[in-house]
Image (cartoon, rainbow, N blue to C red; front, top):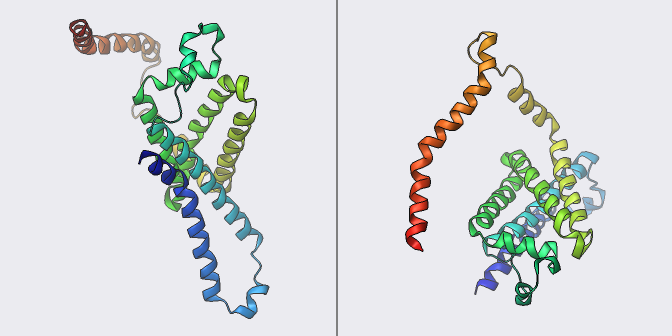
Length: 235
């Protein structure tokens, strides 16, 4: 049953794209007579807009695939039990990394949720930029992980694929660059403290930062002690 659900989730975004493209074609057939269909030629702007739409669904498909695989515990882990009998120096980096990633389910679930949310946001017109910005650091993180751990076994196939995904994300952001620049200007221009301070106050900030860290450590120490006590009683 879980395998069937996994396959359905895996191909859901691709099927939605096919359905959406079908409605697009049907809409053309409804609004134009048959004898004028041969005269319909999309403009350069329409072709570019549709290409960006395809890139959005391309990223959504893979992010949904990656996210659902993490949520179901299918992406990380060791699939050859004999690996546990080998010395660490004989285990490949990807096998060791995938085993460590699989030890904490909260990591997989958390990253999987972020990828699925980003996939949903990037296909909705009102949230496409939010989705693209959310997925960009996720894609870079996946690229770095694949570059560091998978090239030894799988070569450059996965990093090259991730480069294509990152480039697609940048192309989407560039296509909507007017809104991106506007948002950047709003976030960076005129941002300062609400009150003026003397110059010597800024000299105290590093010390105050350390004291703040110390104070937060004191406030959270009861939770740390409780955790230590819980672990001790569990042994």
